[in-house]
Amino acid sequence: MSDRGTTSEGPRLSRAAAHRLSLYLRCLTAWPSEVEKISSSQIAAAVGVSDAQVRRDLAALGHLGQRGIGYDPRELTTVIREALGTHRPWRVVLVGVGNLGRALLRYQGFRSQGFEIVALFDNHPAKVGESLEGLLVRPLSDLPAVIHQEGAELAILTVPREAAQSVADCLVQSGIRGILNFAPVVLRLPPHVPLVTVDLAIQLEQLTFLVQHAHETVSPPLDE
Ligand code: ATP
Figure 1 (spheres, rainbow, N blue to C red):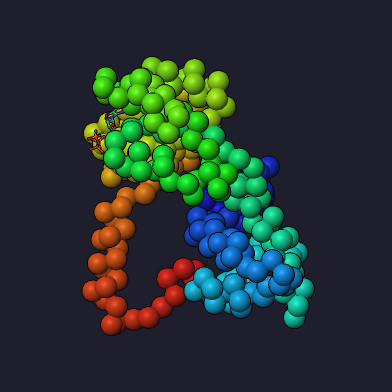
Figure 2: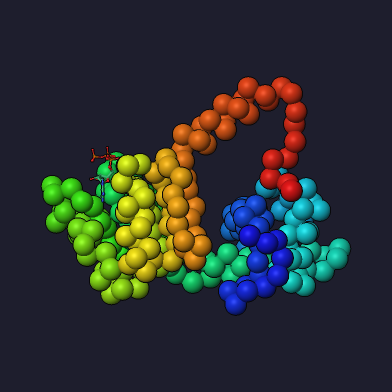
């Protein structure tokens, strides 16, 4: 992904920059509504990156803020949401209603951020037909029709690693636009379908690495 440039859906950002924007948004959400300005150094301190990094990231979104005065938190929130695509709701299907899938289904944070899980899928005969959180668990054969009817654009994949690639292929063939994969496997998807993988064991591995080397260096991990 290139770091600059503009697409029909907004400015092109690197994944690292998009991740920082999500963190800035968290900071803005917690910002007291009566405080009408926020400075790059206040955002930087809250998020743990340098002041210059915040200014660079926000400059890439357009002419925002005034030197010496700061940014309007509401305007910044709107612009960052547009850049990230969360200025509008997204409809999501979840495939694999095992322990992790059910936990994600119950997680309230998705809905509050504009992500609505609209359909559930599984291939286990005992699970198909079950109702979870008011949604029917459907067989995979229903994927194309349901994705179309529900206008779902994203999928959460919580099937075991052995099943993940074939289910991902079905999702792509059914017209899904992006996949959030929780299976601990590297998936191959066509370039027009973006993939984000959350491998919880890798995250823990990264933590053990950092813990082992914590005494050696102290550097801001999110700066580029
Ligand atoms: P449980 O014991 O309830 O099945 P689990 O978290 O141990 O939970 P996993 O083996 O990780 O289950 O599987 C996650 C879910 O993915 C299960 O509900 C399983 O039925 C489902 N699943 C497995 N293979 C497929 C597939 N090919 N298509 C759709 N769903 C699948």
